Each structure stands twice: as C-alpha cells, then as structure tokens.
Image (tube, rainbow over all chains, first blue to last red):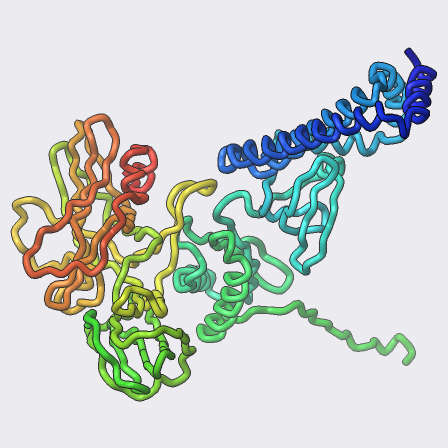
Length: 280
Length: 264
C-alpha cells in the first residue's frame, strides 16, 4: 500500500459523496466520534481530580493534555476507518514526512524533550518566582514547548524550554525563608564593636526579620571610603520588600541617632606648589 | 472586659490592654474600630474596658457593617505557634518533670452576640522566628521571654517564674506547660513551640487561662504532645479549640517533627 492507495481511497470516497452509503457511514460515525470525545473528556476530568493534591500541578496538566490528545487521535483513527481509508498507508507516508518535518522542526522537538526533562526534574513549580538571565517572574505555566512567566512589572514572558535547560535558573522562592544581605559602610573612625551591637539591635527590633536563624553581621572588608559590613537578615519569603524598605530606614535612623557616619566615596587631592625653576 | 455589652449609639468605647488600645463605635449598622498595638516588651500592668471615650486620634479606622446590638471584645490565640526559649538548657532526667508558666499574647476581635467577627488584630507587636531547618519548618511568633522551670517539691522562692504575672497581666493568656520525661535517657530542653489550635481559653475573675499542655518524652525516644482539659469551677470557656488540629496530627505523625519543635 502506498500513496497511490490513499489517493484512490480518497477518490472513491469523494466520488461516493452524495450517495446513501456515505450518509449511512456518516450517521454511524458521528455518534461514535462524539462518544469517544465525551468519554475522553470525562476521563480527563476524573483523572485530573484524582491527581489533584497527589502530583505537582504541572504534571497533572501534562497528563490531562495527553489524555485529551489521545482522545483526538482515537477519534481521527475512527473517522478514517469509517470512511474506509487505510491508515497503514497513511502511517507509512507519515513516517517519510516525519523525517522531513523532523529536520524542519528540530528546535520544537528539542523544546519538547527539554520540557519533558523539566517536568520530570521539577526545578520549579507553578507559582514559584524564578530568575532566568535578567528576567525574573512568577511561573504561570509549564508547557511542552515553553514556560510562561508573569514579571513583577506585569509583562508576559515566554521562555523556550531549551533555553531553560541550557541556562542557570534561580528559583527564588524554593525555600520558605531567605536571607537579605545589606552592605553597610561605616566610617574608619567608628567603633566597630559598637556598630555590630547596634546592627544586632536593629535586627532584633524589626518585626519582619526573623529571630532564628540569627542575623549575620560580618566585618567584610576595608574599602576605599570606610569599613564594609555585611548585614544578613533572615525573613519569610513573602516579606522581601517590606523587610528591605524597613531595614534601610531603621539603619539610617539608628545610625543618625547613635552618631555613626555612613561615608560616601570621596577623594582628597593635594596640590603641590610650583617650583621656581619651572620658569613661571 | 470580655463580656457582651450594648454600646450606645455614636459613642466611642475604649479597651486598655497593657499599653495597647482597642476602640469601637456603633452607629446603626455601621461599626467603627481602631487598634493601637504595643511592643510586647513594653507592656504595662493595666487593662480594662469598655469605657466611654473621645474618638481615637490618628488611628486608621476599620469599618464593618452588621446588624446587631450587643458586642464583646474577645481573645483568641494566634494561628502561628508561639516559640519560647528556656533561659538555660534544661536537662530533665528520666522520670523527671518540669512545669513552665508562660503568658501568651492573644489576638483580639470584636464579636457580635450571634457569632460573626467585626474586626480583629494582634494588639502586641512580636517579631517572628523560624523553627526547622532552612529548607522546611514553620513560622512562629517569637516570645521575648525565657522560661524557668518549676519542679515537684520545689519550695516557693521569690524569684519570679514569669515576667508577666497572672494578677497584673490579665489580658494575656496564661498557659501551663508540663514537660515529662518518661524515657530512659536524659533530655535537654532548649525551646518549646506551643501549637494553639486545640487549646481552649477560659476566663475566671477576668484572668485568661488555658488547658494544661503536656509534652511527654516517651520510652521509645519519641515525643507526644497532648492537651489536658481543665475542669475548673467558676471558669467560663471563652474559646473552644478545634478537636482535630495540627497538634493532634503531630502526635499521630510522631516524633521527629516534635523533636525539632522542642529542640530536644
């Protein structure tokens, strides 16, 4: 059986259009197809409900989609059978066409395979905040070809799965608590032990900073303008912005109150007097 | 203080809660509320209300619309567990038990006589803390207090076991915890998380108390946390804890998790 066979099947089908036999076939086929589609739809709903809470959301979505496409495939096969078109020839032709399409659709296939890896590896889930390159956003959907993000300035970004597999992805909200690192610079004249005590007290009094794990105060380095201190505060992941804003204000207010200077970059320039021999 | 009363129309009322204040005004079906929270470390031994007062200044007003005449200020424990530290690591040897008293800051809410809540807040400002490791655990309210144990046969001494005593801090919920060691090994107690969902709150002479919370260190090395309900004459039950809650689940699920909670 080859392409000639399919063409002759189609020709005989088209020539038969209008005949009673075709209408009989159609009358038998439509309910069967509807039954198949409805059955698969019910199966999709039942399986979806059964999986809810037991498997991650994106895996549930994928399984539901597979059932849906299986239903469509089954319906198409039924239609062809009813119309008397031999599918083995079509599948043979599809194999040849598949090679051609495969070359043309390399990227898509790569994305699909990457998508399968993403779903099995689960580096992130729906609702997680991830960072891919310079894009940060909330994961809206994980599909076979791409993932969709909603950025914080409310843009919709589609990232191909292949890109996700190839690049570093930071899952910002994977763990329930995070650490906010604030770099604080103090004057070289400041009493560093006192500054450390003040910072610990600031952390203790800020309601968004967690008491446990304890805040981190590290005298980081002697920089150009002053001593740089790393001030790390643990927080519950949803309080990032609240903590960041409040802690900056707390540091500034308290440092003013305690007379601790925050230096800014400055340069002392010494002008030497011109010598007499220069001729001026 | 916690009883239902019938407010006069368009009159503001005030409740004093150890430095924190709650305000309420009824005007027909419109209810206005305002809350002034206070740092938990800055509590003062004063509480009372409802007292007629002037309108609160510079407080954000919360509105509610509800039909009814009688209302009460009611306490309830926070949904977040309360995490308390022991003053020093306390070693409890096999067969020993130690009692701790702690005053828990309640959330408050205005409750209509037929049940619905008009508005709620935590009147005491507490920082939060985490227990568990950095990849999993629970968010807790951090109690700025360190517990000292009371033991069997201990003579009364003048050292206060609780900074916020029952008599002066009536608006706090006074809770007794008993840690028993029924295992064959010593346990070191560092911190204690109190899950509140199963705990009832009682009121007697204006003082708020709870059931006894019992933490047992079992012979199999596990821990079990149970609530022993009080049978106290004259005490009125203000809040009923849920029968099935986190605490019960923890008991069923066992032990590793509880071990993390208590730091044992």
